[in-house]
Length: 234
Image (cartoon, rainbow, N blue to C red; front, side, top):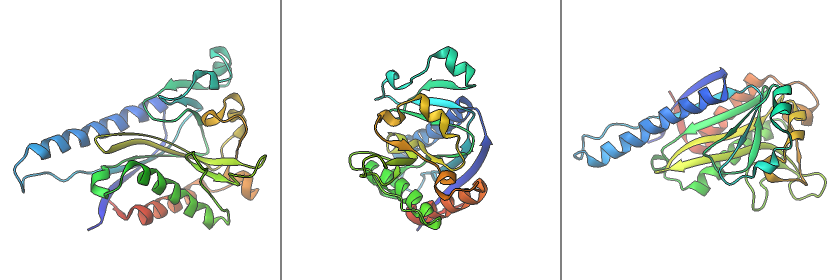
């Protein structure tokens, strides 16, 4: 039987507000899993998986394993760029979120999907790779890295189009991916994206050389995620 996922598009939302909402859904699933383990057989409650899409105002986020040195501007310069900065509880280094970017937050119980963490990240990447193929772009993985890239192994041409950084605890996920659609790429100039100093950043708009309807892209990503993870939306 296919898993069910509750989808919600939060629209443009403050980063902290979205983070708090993720934490709420995450805690609900973890608590329910504990209760189910202590319940008699046949009395367990169904666990609800969630998929959130949103866009954030300009913000930089630094993962647990990241270095603050990869943020190349100070607090005054951040303010001048109307950007904020958060240290957060996902893996990975520093990244940027902003308007024109699809940020996806799956809050999934991986035990229900019967996948491990590496498989989960692989499936997130595969969903974006399949999305890019609709636009005649060949998304690829970077050896010893995460996310989705174009020409990842070609010196001087490697560029990331989708970043991935997740937190997993008790096999429940949060945080997720950031897919550049019509993103203002200038904001990546103020960081070493994901800690890299020798690779570029791109967007769907830049690659196809035209403004993209982000809502249409969201529909494709949802369709490909449903296909790859084998779930039904509710």
